Image: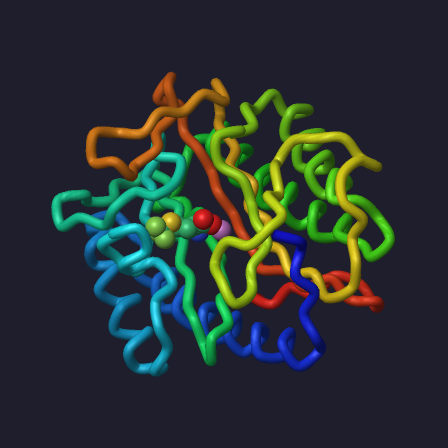
Length: 249
Ligand code: MF3
Ligand code: CO
């Protein structure tokens, strides 16, 4: 499918969706601490989603059982919330959530430090977050898709981290996953021309060690092959003539 161009009215609806999603993230953020289980985060997110009267984009998606993905330490993405998964000091947890409001999707992820983490882990979190923000800055009308990808790759490889290739960002709108794929690796100046009205979920998934990942027996949880930690940050971003607009802040 061709890359969908959204009208200003559609982008306004997606911004409402993104603002609702941010409220869910804010509730979850306050609960991240040693001793909390990933199911505690899920239950709080579900309650907030219901309070807001919005719909989860994840639950039921290809049979996915929860409104959050909670991916701890070496889990890269799609960790399933569990009563038995208790967060400890020094862990990191990626919280990924999506909602649908009036037919429009938003998708965002944050990775939190649980208590204080090692210097190396802190560097992984800061670099991954910085690469997302720099990639958003690179999402300029008139540029190319590869401009976004190359920024993430360049910043994260300079720090010696592994860029996950098995999962990528995506167009988003009336579906969670629209064209194009938005990889976290690639060449500036290459790929489709960026146009006003395109909306992308940009989501670097960056590993402390090897880029290689595998999916566990549960069919969902992706982990690093070397068991090194992995960070993930994501925003839904609209491209406009006046520059990129983050819809999930
Ligand atoms: N945020 C993820 C993405 O960008 C979606 C999670 S998969 C689901 O593709 F099954 F949980 F929905
Ligand atoms: Co996404």
